[in-house]
Image 1 (cartoon, one colour):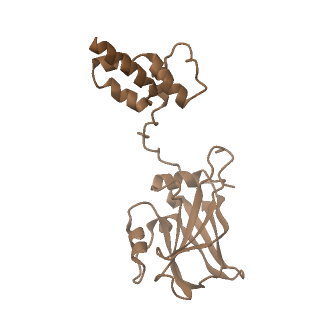
Image 2 (tube, one colour):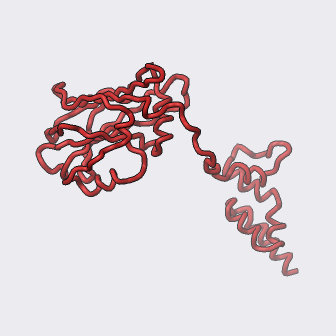
Image 3 (cartoon, rainbow, N blue to C red):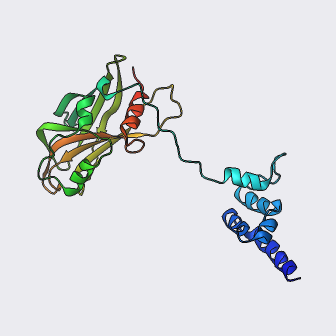
Length: 253
């Protein structure tokens, strides 16, 4: 009799639980598991989660629906295949301008040099910037030599084109993107622009390229002494393979 009353109490409680708690109840003991297997309780769970599913499709159960579709997708187990593009194939063309259209910095740099980063990190940079540059994740960083000074508060823009040797085509990474934010603590002035992908990649969008001017000191002076420039895709890519896949998907012309 006691077990009967106990079972009736569970039948009153189980419809009020969410799926995670109902799964936990099935692990308590055999009686709880046998009661919780009733598909009515899983219908209560599923119709709260997906109100439009008032009738389970033929050939399935609400328990199965919950078990199949309520779990997060498994992590990607397979690494990305190697892209056809390499940094040896690439040349980057970088131009930084003042708001008066005076050129501050203009250069063409190979992908291998950009990928190699700064050989010698200068003294006098902020500790947070040094820590960032020392991290092992993929970076595209180049020295600005000779260094340039940008008056604090003045507007500067950057354009970046890239060419590839294998197809003899070019793509635009950034076009007059404005350095409209100065991160004083990280000693970086940042500009961003959304990447332009090939029409053959219609489902790839809303990924930004970030271009950073790296400067000495804390940015508390009247001008910023720029010693380096960084290009990254931190919204979507941190490894070399991911960088190259993004570049390969650009709208090459």
